[in-house]
Length: 418
Ligand SMILES: Cc1ncc(COP(=O)(O)O)c(C=O)c1O
Image (cartoon, rainbow, N blue to C red; front, top):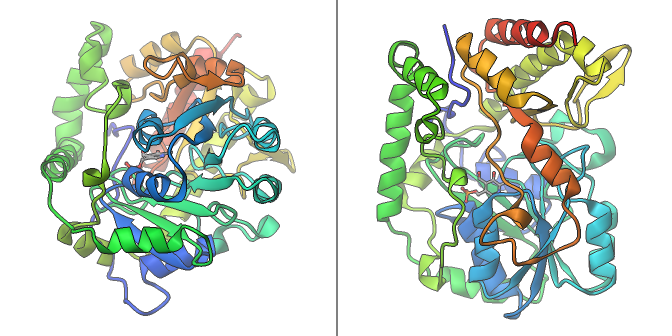
């Protein structure tokens, strides 16, 4: 059976017990080591609310040039200016050294550090420099939700060092409430009361955007069921790829259409009743099970592609060699497995013609993408390199091990003789 390259997590996976450790909100507070948690219609809205309240208008916010474009819109809509840095080839997150230099030279008032593709980066030294220079550090943990017991190594997990940390419960995230997000902060900061007061005045509502996402989500669930995907959707995708009907293959992913979206305080919305209801049916145990299944898939990829990694024909950022085996343990939460390759178009042509749903990653180098190319940047060499070479290997819990073996076999076949 062919499998879609993405799959959303089920809406119902056990029931969490409020007031006990199991509750998702107390879990997020625990892993981020913060005191207060706010829920929102989306993570980006939580970030927007924070930026509106914690920073004076006209602040400069450093962030990665390789991130979700709407997170940059949020900076602009909140009345601030983005300042782009390049990425680190080990985890594809923003380059910490470039961030430190900007903070130390007082060129920026805040930093949004994006933990991308399931990776985590140690922000201890960056957070110390931020504190010394009165610069606010925000950790975007949308793609790197992490449980403490997944990795005791180095005693840190994404979200721990930020003055504020943000988490997503979007449709493709580990916790799925159709869309949704959380902001966590400490209660002893100068802006905490402003955020609490403003948050208390918000009303939850079911918006047109939420209804659209709900229907999109339900439709996505239907078209990615085995029968529908194998006999209807995948054949259409395959033909549209061969005939270069780009709009079909890009599907509805918003990341493919970067554009400025203006927002104001009216767009700051809390989670609605449906999102709250779905949140109750997400358990930490389900997150742990997902993690273990994804870790298994990742270890198969790393094992089966070892020769190509050895020969540097492909690069899996961050993977390290232990006992003659590659591993991402303690480095990735396996939400995604990015692979950097050459001959990307040819490889995709080959894999799609062989029946695999696979695609280039959609995030752009924003410092070269309209309308963001006018903002200041430090550098973007790595990001430019990565956007031309990256594909994401499918790695979600219900992806079958057999599909991973088959996919690796085809990738090895493609590069045979190189
Ligand atoms: C790294 C990153 N940041 C921010 C977001 C935005 O999250 P949300 O859709 O909950 O606003 C996403 C969503 O995919 C993301 O991947």
